[in-house]
Image 1 (tube, rainbow, N blue to C red):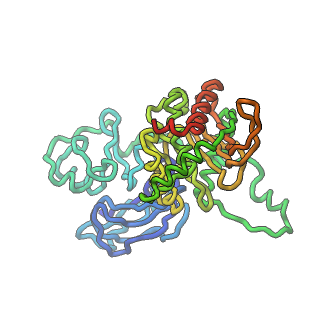
Image 2 (image 1 turned 180 degrees about the horizontal axis):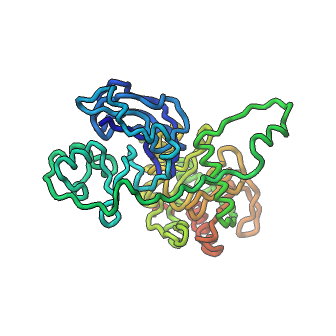
Image 3 (image 1 turned 90 degrees about the horizontal axis):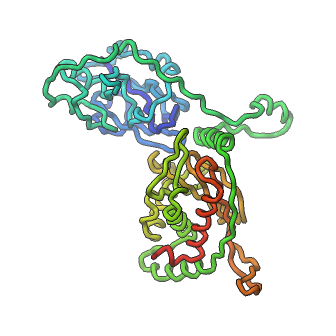
Length: 435
């Protein structure tokens, strides 16, 4: 029987995507692991791999189509001996009514190719296998619960069942024709206020351009609106003297020039925050609904501006890495972020974020926390200012203003102040970060 190829969920939050480009055409033969298409999510363009072998019988969704719902049929795969005349026998549900097949995917379902619905097995566990693998298993009398999948995210594919030994098939806990009711997908919140029609009436007669929101802008609007409405922010501010850091940075860059390494002030800020989270471990935490998760490593996210939005790639185990390693990794992540080539695991997670607008001449600002992070550091420009030293003498120093936005559910005032104090001490005494 022809098999539907479904729109995959490529990230835990993906509900729909754009089928950017087909890399196969009707009549092409594909094998497991072949790249079939490029799909744009709200954050990135990702490659979509085949999990079964067969012939592309029909492409249902044209490339460039936006708003394709997760689990909607996008193509038909034919097995050996089948032809285009057999396509009418394929299950039409997803193709005919894609809206009905868009229940929000659970994190366990976000494989590189969305699996066909599987009947729950005993104990409530689900077995993910390709339709072809299921048919072979049924013919051989195999119990799929005892087979380890080699496909994306452990999915069972044809090769896994062909060499498996026959065993009694476990009775399913409930009939596949009576699936357990799926939880209703929570609507994605959007900014409140007048709708487009009401705004259009206000500006009637004026010259303007209507810009349609893409997936990234919709996601940013929804997440940050939610953050400001639900996260109790408070703000801590400090000025940091950068003269010692600037001199130390110049010295290191001179010594590292032969290796092609050039450290930025931002590299020192990342390292300072990572070490501060280790020094104040209670602040290295995230909000998890009715719990707080305290992280052991310092996984620091850094905001990167791109056309139409931003990414926050995460530098994991930042406290363990040298300044030169952090610099190289940050440059790589930023470059791929601007090309929208980051994988979800590279921009999800972390407990703490940095947003640096100093290079744009911004003196200071307040950043919005990106849930579930516990805090975000807003970094302004380093500017020369008059300062009073310990002897009461007035001098000139390079001063950088920072603001720590803190989630009060996770971090109280005194704890936030302790974390910011540790960050300041690291930056004002940069050699301490190498000790």
